[in-house]
Image (cartoon, rainbow, N blue to C red; front, side):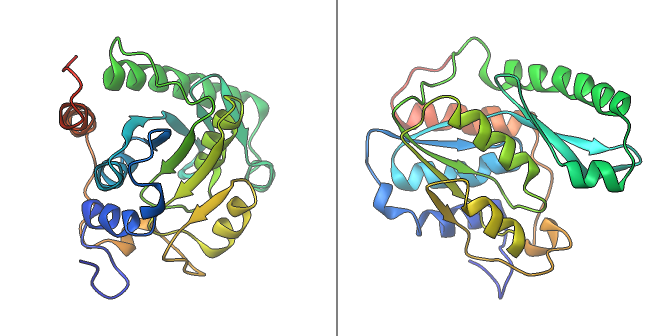
Length: 223
């Protein structure tokens, strides 16, 4: 259970988030997509509570050279790239640095897709209601790349659901989707980790295990 304004962990955050999404429960066209890695444990709880399908959408942050935690952009499956021109300008990032960072993160994106999905094809999102889940939003650049990727795939309804997000980021992203759900919206986020008691790193193994567990619970055969 949430203690004050902090979640116990990602599982706790997912359970609380699912309680705000009950109108989507047991609807066959609903698909929950977690953003690896930290968004997957949250998405797992949402998908289990709503009794709907779960998958991942791999998105990689493009860290600003010298300030890797600051996102100057993001890439997503399907060749989508989203750049934050303000951060690029303020940090004086060169076009060469952008391309070098993009190539490096594209290699990692491909590795993660193979690690999480193996030979499975991505679930078809066309004509479906898609709920995109992450463990929190700071600049929102990564989520914006996910939104752009999904819009290009002709989803019927696009919902973004996160446990905590910077107030201005939430306001901006809410304009990009059909529904935006975020119970905690601090003006000064500082760091997503501060809104969790336990914010340990999620591993590739945990992502694979959560996806496999959900498929088994849904009656799908193990890959």
